[in-house]
Length: 141
Image (spheres, rainbow, N blue to C red):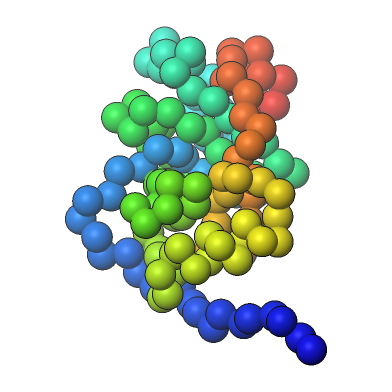
C-alpha cells in the first residue's frame, strides 16, 4: 500500500499588504551585484545585525527589514504567517494553505526552518546561518 499523499499546488502572486521582509535573496549573477553593493556601502550597514546563508548559486542575507539592502535583481523573503518554520518569497504564495506544505517538507527533510522558493524552485534549509562580516564579503567577491 502506498501512503504517499500528493498535494497539487502552484505559486500565485502575493497581494497581501502586510508583508515584512526579513531577508534579501540573490540568485546566480545577482549574488555578485549584492555583495559588490554591500562592499561599496559598508559604512551604511551595521553588519552585526545580519546573518547569511550561502549556496553554490544563491545567498540569503537575514536582518532587520528596514536595513535590508535594495539592489536591482534581488528578491525578498518573509516568514509565513501560518507557520513560522516556513519562509516564502514576498512576491509569491502557495495556492494551498502553507501549513500543508510545511508539514510535507518537515516529513521529508530534517531541517526545522526552510525557505521555499518559487524561481528557481528550491527548498533551502535555514538551520545554519553565519554572521555577515566585511571579511566574508571581500572573500566572496
